[in-house]
Each structure stands twice: as C-alpha cells, then as structure tokens.
Length: 110
Image 1 (cartoon, rainbow, N blue to C red):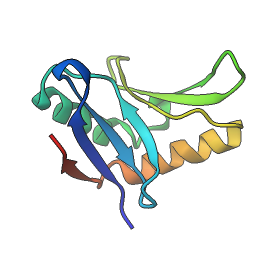
Image 2: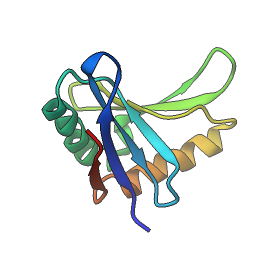
Image 3: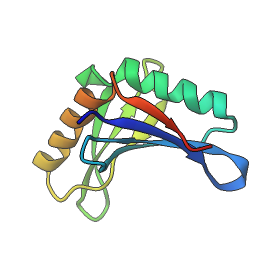
Image 4: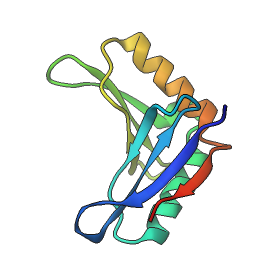
C-alpha cells in the first residue's frame, strides 16, 4: 500500500501536511504554511528532496530520543519526524520517507 500526503488546516488559518506510510502511520510532519498553495509547494519539495539521504539531518533530543529533519537544498526545514526510541528505528523512518514520498498521493483535507 502506497503512502499519502494529507494537506490540512492548522491553527490561525494556516496549513500543514503529514506524510503517512502505507500503514497510515505519520512518518513526516511539515512546518506551518500561511497559504494552501505554499503547503502544496512544501509537498512537492518533500517529493523532490526525500530520495537524497544527505537531505536528512539526524538529531537527538534533550531526552535522548532520536529524530530527523528533512531539509531542502537551501537548508530550510521541510518536515520533521516523530521521536524514536533508538537510532535504528529512526533510520527505518528515514527509509520509509525516502520510499513513500516520491509517489505519494495527496489527500486534500482543506
């Protein structure tokens, strides 16, 4: 089962998206966008940048949880993962984003 993006309204009239894997788990959450068009542009940026491993920044939170950030070529953050209990689980999350993002369909919930 293929993944999908869900574009949806956020707080204060803004927009955001989640990338979900085929099992419906959220694997990437976007930043907030002021317009729906910008949100859709963010989805296209994920599709373009997700296949490149170097675009993923691996991080460790203050509590020791692992997570990653997907950045565009201009080093702007496009999306962020959930917190993972281990580095290996985080790496599986990255592989899932790399596999799902390029062909994911868009569900417009706006």
